Amino acid sequence: MVLTKEYRVVLPIATGEYQVAHLWTVAEQSKRETGGGEGVEIMKNEPYTDPETGHTGQYTYKKISKDSRVPAFIRMIAPEGSLDVYEESWNTYPDYKTRITNGYLKDSFHITITSRHMPYTGTVDDPFNIADNDDVDRVVVDIANDPTDNDAKPDNDPATFVSTKTGRGKLGSNWIEDSLKNDKTPMMCCYKLVEVEFKVMLLQSKIESVIQTKSRQIVNYFYRQLFCWMDDWYGLTMEDIRLLEEKTKKELESLKAEGQLRGMSLNDEGTSL
Image 1: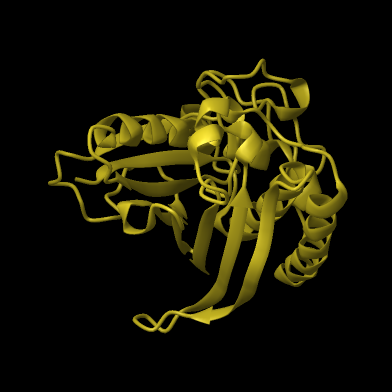
Image 2: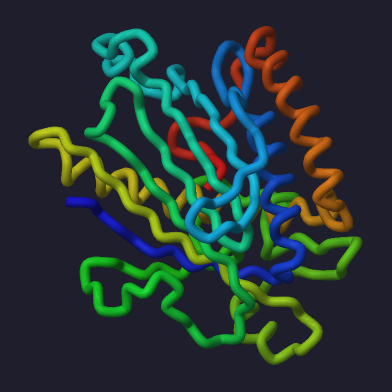
């Protein structure tokens, strides 16, 4: 049985700004998580056309190595290379699809994330047409007020950050409701349908639950960064992003080969959700 949750992240960002914001944040986060033989390796990044819809976009294929973040007793019994995961993404904005797999577990494990991005008006839609599915929990993520594992820092805390370029922020305790009353505030919602399957006897339910708990933490952490890095990505174009991605690919290769271990602990790790 696949454990499925739908996460809903409201942002004070326009849908026209989001694609650049997302890709810039993914690139920056990848660099901060790579070093000492571990981290993100971009194996493919190329134009893509969806065969069903005809929509064009970008396909990426990444290898992610994080052995040092795994408890020592698991590293002792795990075959070499078995802890690496592979991430495929089909980005036809405003829709994304990401699939995370493991070469060792093969068909016994996958995380599939379907993302849709829409303007937010206070009316909660059913973007995935699953309104009648009682097995799906719907979770609203508040980037300014949800608890975090880390002590919030001023430069990474939406409750204290103010963008010098746009004037957006600080996000208060009722920022979503307050923003809806202000016609000048752009509002959008990222809907993420996260499906987790771990078909290993005696461990399936426990591991799937742990991964979904972790998914909420990752979603919250990623979008806090995306908002607080606004002054870095605001005003960039998709042409700028494609050049940045080429530069980032080379930087990641160098960091992974020569740099020191970098990034957060297992409990705070970020990905490109």
